[in-house]
Length: 122
Image (cartoon, rainbow, N blue to C red; front, side):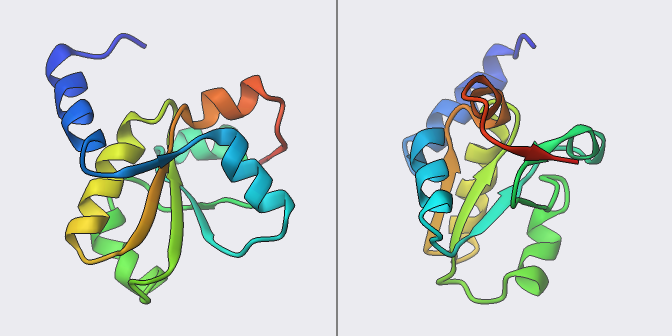
């Protein structure tokens, strides 16, 4: 998908203020049994078509509204991902503004996850 220049600009600005992790780092953490919230922020239809194994779904459109009920501890470790790492970067920035202290965006999103043939589920 071709993204607009303004969208890319706000994503790049957000990336300067957040932490990111590679898909390899996230997969290694999951494989080692580390405990953290692994959250897919894509749209409902994207989630239904397949998602990273072990992830839970909180769409970007509702994450600000629902996050405190679903993950009330603002010191919880959270890894967000989307299709390519743009929406998750924006969502990571918002959660930081809401007081979450250990939230990162998985750079490359599900696209990179799939390129590595990491496990998925429906």
